[in-house]
Structures are given as C-alpha cells and as structure tokens.
Length: 244
Image (cartoon, rainbow, N blue to C red; front, side):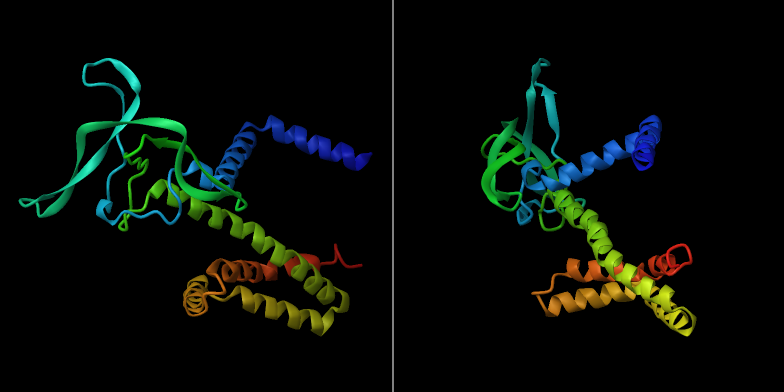
C-alpha cells in the first residue's frame, strides 16, 4: 500500500509541475515522430537527387496569384547558374503548381520494419518535390534525414542503459561484496574505462565499422556509452547502501 501511495504521489507531483509535464509531452511527440519516421517523412532515408544539392526549403503558398485564398501549394525549384556571382541559384518554377496532400503515395517502405507500405503523411501531387528544410550536399531531404538520424541518436541512450545496468549491477555487487583490495582494483578499472576520451573512441568506431560492415557503428557506440558510464553506476551498486 505504501509503495502504491508513493507512486501515486510522484505522478501527482509530475502532473502539477508544468515544466516537467511540457517536457514529457515534447519527449513523447519526439519519440512518436521517430518511431513512425518512415510514414511521417516525405522521402525515404535513401532518397537523393544530386541535381538539387543545397536546395532551399520549399515555399508553401496559401494565397494564389490573384490574391485569393487557396489550398496550400508549392512550386518546384529550377537550378540556374549566375555568371556574375559565380554560383548556382535556385528559382521558383511558377509554370506548375503542386498542391500539398496528406496520406499521399510516395516511395515504398516497410511500416515499423514489417508491413510494406507507400503512404506518407505529407507530400505533393505527382511531379512535385517537397523539401521542408531544404536539401544537403547530396540532394537528400534534410527533414527526412533528421527523422531517421534522430531515431538512431535517441535510441542509443536506451540501448546503452541495457548494456550498463546488468553489467554494472553484477560488477558493482561483486566489488562491494568482497570489499578491500578487490573493491579498490575493480573501481580503478571502471574509472580507467571512464577516462577513455570520447573523440578517440569515436574515431576508432568509425574506422572499425568501415572495415567490418557487419558491425554497424551504432552497436559499437551503444557498447561504448554503456561502458563509459560503468564507473559511476558500479560505485553506486558497491556502496554500503546496497551491500550489507
């Protein structure tokens, strides 16, 4: 009963704290968007149009050329070279309108990695391109890449926790149980792992992942982030509050 009462009081305190509640809602929206990135993103993670490198974000119009309210639409960009400025410029091709649509058909993908699907949350009519945040040097849609990249970045923390928790619990428990020299040696080793510079390990993981394609870099990073925080977690588990 006491534990249930404590859990209820924690939830009530969280609901009363406006900042914590807003942060929780924002975090939920972010993870929801990343989970359904294939559906929300206008393009797949492999989409690339080299002719549209560094294209600016698509301009969305709701008022037509006659000054009247219209359904949202956009124009494609046409690439032109400016000889005076010696650079490539993008100008709107106003010869054809492309209206925004929801649940539009686009590139094929597997919904949640299982169900084959071709519907995307937002897009434009056939022949048009929608770049909500523009494109990168390879002509890839930045908004779509942001969703797919965020999926990996936001997942690494949880995967690292799954690596950290069981190893840290066992390692710290053994250290605290035996104590003395065993505890000192084990804790110094954990601190040595924590002292490995992140930049050096990141360079190593990039090189390792490049040489051995069967070991994606994300798995190596998860292992590193887990072991890098091993020292602090082991110190908690080996403390007197945990080991009697």
